[in-house]
Length: 168
Image 1 (cartoon, rainbow, N blue to C red):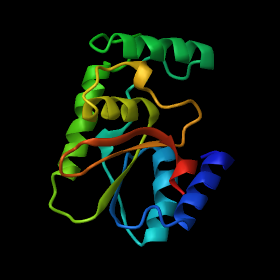
Image 2 (image 1 turned 45 degrees about the horizontal axis):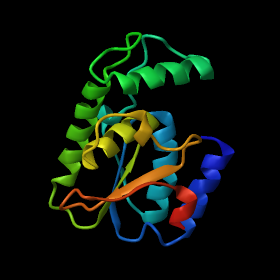
Image 3 (image 1 turned 180 degrees about the vertical axis):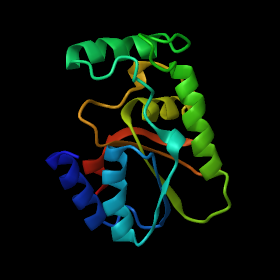
């Protein structure tokens, strides 16, 4: 995690914004765990790792230079039923991450659920709960550190993407 990311997480756990959180769910990917673990420690909660919450599978291309990555990501969102350069299809990634979120949200556990994840699948999750077509128009702002909130029982989106800095 970057210094900016560490600073965001430190400020967030120092605030009372996460009060009422009873579950912390993260993918097994390094950045998600690096974000979830200090939050979990501060709240005295475990991190539940959900393997299938991972970012969209881009292993077919491996690392791409930023400009090429952005162009490929644009195509990924623009054509959700096509595999772009061997990447997982956006629609499939959306189904996967929604299935995982629903498995958690459908529990009878009290309290708030914090999902810690990744850019593209976060956007796909947001599009699902906001009842929007998959589109990069609904993507979070560059630079990470974004969140949206849904009401647990109704699954209604309470607000779109906001900066973690706004949560404090």
